[in-house]
Amino acid sequence: MKRHWFWKGPKFALIGALFVAVVGVVVMSLWNWLMPALFALHRITFWQALGLFLFSKLLLGGFHGRHGFHGRGIKRDAVRRIWRGRMMERWEKMTPEEREKFRETMRRRCGPFGEAAAEPQV
Image 1 (cartoon, rainbow, N blue to C red):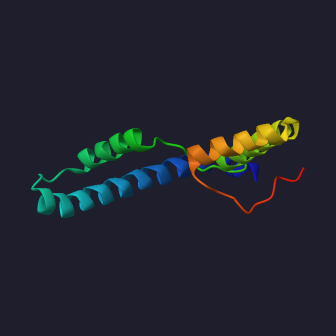
Image 2 (image 1 turned 180 degrees about the vertical axis):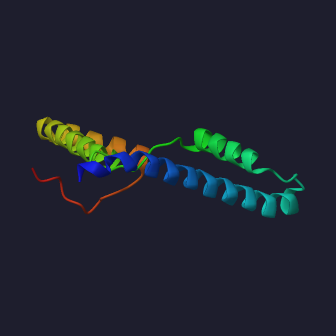
């Protein structure tokens, strides 16, 4: 199994080059098919299509890879749990008058919600 590590680098480079070529051809084909007909723009070359793709990736989202176990979703859930725990602690410490004042403030800011809902259970 250890003998095959040598071929992984060239294989990865070949797959990467193939991906770049396919993306370039797709972007060039779409541009040359749509843009001259719709907006009277000139046709572009393969290298201009690659440059356009790179430019659009930088402007519109960057190069983020896939989010696995440590992705954004896990972080968001953890933040929600922390925020909810803190809010529940604050709610428990509030007097009934403070709770009603908080509800009124939220109704003014966000509109009516949860009128029939009971108070959170701890």
